[in-house]
Structures are given as structure tokens and as C-alpha cells.
Amino acid sequence: MTSTPELRTERLTIREWDTSDAAAALPVYGAEEVARWLTPEMRAVHDVAAMRSVLQAWIEAQPNLVPPAGRWAIERNEDGRLVGGLSLRLLPPYEEDFELGWQLRPDAWGNGYATEASRALVRWAFDQGVEELFAVARPKNERATATARRLGMEWVGETEKYYGHRLQVFRIRPSDLKRGTAG
Image 1 (cartoon, helix red, strand yellow):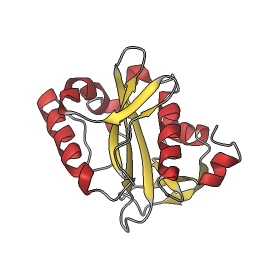
Image 2 (tube, one colour; image 1 turned 180 degrees about the vertical axis):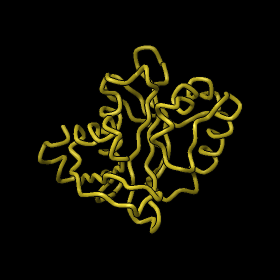
Image 3 (tube, helix red, strand yellow; image 1 turned 30 degrees about the vertical axis):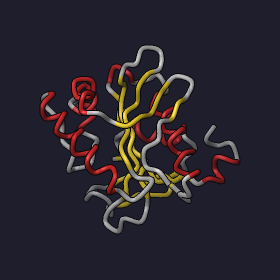
């Protein structure tokens, strides 16, 4: 198994982060309307130097993550513009379940990029032997819950087990793809 895919969809490329992406990543991870929904350890990044440090930490951590965990950039094919990021990570506290996460710069919202990129990463993760993926979202994060549903993820309930917040939990399995629920 490899934790560093480069996946292409009709409109997007999912690729490894590079520290040279810092200025382009800042409108994603520096936007308060994005950062307010991120996990507690990830706050809004306020300048390019700090964003470069975050990207460097992600890049250095990548080889040590349990495959297929990782973090990747989402780039638009038509112009090479970075529009967001994706992640697969182990959910706390037991680190048994993989969480799918997506973040887009606000000016890229509403184009279906999160769904398109996430769908490609979900298929890749299942090809790596993952049996199910979860997405967690705060109850008021309507964009995230809508994206999870568009991916064909099933709502499985609420919990406070992850990250110390009450969260909506969604799950997808390979059989959900075969049934066509995830497009």
C-alpha cells in the first residue's frame, strides 16, 4: 500500500503537498469560515510562513502514517489552481477508524469539488484494502453533512467520542459504491 496517490478526476488532481503551496493553501486553511469547522488542534493559519510550517509538518509526517492515511492538495486541472485539501487520518481516541476530511477555499464552494475529489480518494482507499471510511461533522456544518450525503455516506449517529465535540458521524463502505449510492 502506498500513502501518496496522485489521482485525477475529470476536473481535479489530488496530489502531495509541497511547501511551495503555502501561499495557495492560505486561503483554505487561513479562512475563518473553513477553520471554524476543523479539528481542535487545527486553527486558522494567519500567514504564509505559518502555512509553510504546517505544510512542512504534514509532508514530514506522511511517511510515518499508517497507510493509507495522508494529506493531499486538490488542484483544478483547467488552470492548476489549488482549491483545497483532502485527508485520510485515524480517528481518535482508538485510532482504528479512518476519517475522510475535505477543506476548500470559500471561493471554490458550490462547484462539487469536495464531492468529486473525495469520491476519488474513497475509491483509492478501498483499493488499498480499507473496509470503511467515516466523516465527522459538527451538527451545524451543513456543507460538510451535505457533502457526506452526496458521497453516499450513511448517517450512523452522533457521538462526543472524537475530538471532544458532539459530532455527526457518516460512514461509507465498498458495497455502497457497488450499489451506486456514491456515484
